[in-house]
Length: 160
Image (cartoon, rainbow, N blue to C red; front, side):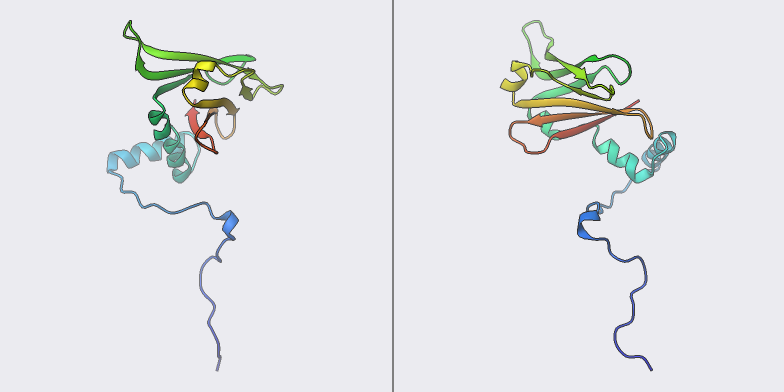
């Protein structure tokens, strides 16, 4: 005869610092699920990782800042790159207001930072921008935008 508590079945709980986050149930239609599954296979990611990257394709806080698009001319060769920041605001000629921020690559050529932030971006609440490119598990650029009102940067992922 045994006394005391019986052992719980299953995987033991992870320490708090290793827990990834909350699980959010999401219902996808057949077409959406097929698209996400196909994308995950093409980029050799798990479905969860692929969907997490999808969520980082844009951030509502950029909308609130008046930003309509970020244009990055991509990873690869070149020590100087341009990150275009296109705002929703229209100019007199009907075109959207755009700021082209120059970024300079580090020695390895995988991290691009500004030497000096454009004053127009600073006026609009964008304190800093930088880009880190990776080749594994596939080519992608992670664009970081630090807003003056936020402690953590916004992270946007662009796959190639």
